[in-house]
Amino acid sequence: MTEVMTNGFCLLSKQEMNLIDGGGWVEAGQAFLGTVLIGISPAVGIGVGIAAGPIAGVAAGVAVAAAGSSLIGSAAH
Image (cartoon, rainbow, N blue to C red; front, side, top):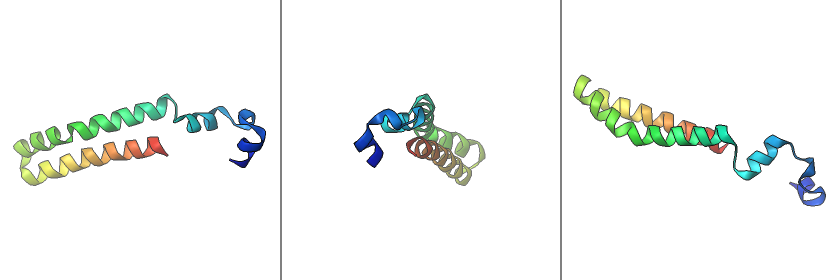
């Protein structure tokens, strides 16, 4: 950050500029997919719960939500 403050942004690579700006298309896609997975996790849990029992439903819902949270976390760096 010291180099940016003294020399400006000309020393940063494209990837470093994307990180300052908030990311590129890959990060946006990961965040969107993570949000969708978290959103559908209750429906997955209910569906699996009906088909295989309540404990399996809870486990499936939590697994889908955890996968979505992981994607959002990796998009945020």
